[in-house]
Image 1 (cartoon, one colour):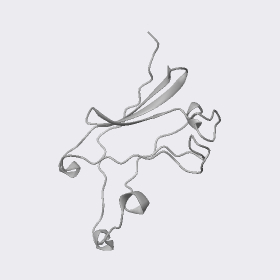
Image 2 (image 1 turned 90 degrees about the horizontal axis):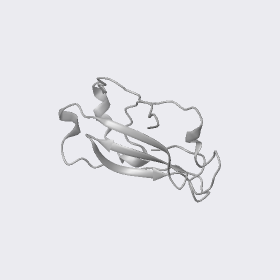
Image 3 (image 1 turned 30 degrees about the vertical axis):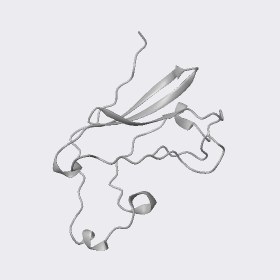
Length: 116
């Protein structure tokens, strides 16, 4: 999810995508990537999402040109969390919390694209 104060139509909300894996994601480590390309097309930025090298979503810079609908041109940070339930994940049986839930992260890499 890209969290913003307003979406590209000026409505409160964020840009969200759901990835349905064709395999069990808990069985092994996987590569998750977010790629931000600045001014890629017609001066607009694009953010793309990948799982194991396969792109599953992209979001182009908002049509409304302000920091409330596209704040990604300002400094930002990365959050890794184990989000369970909520409006996107659906209902969750509380019994799953009878044992610890763990998210294993092997590494995090951040690259800066350089101009050619």
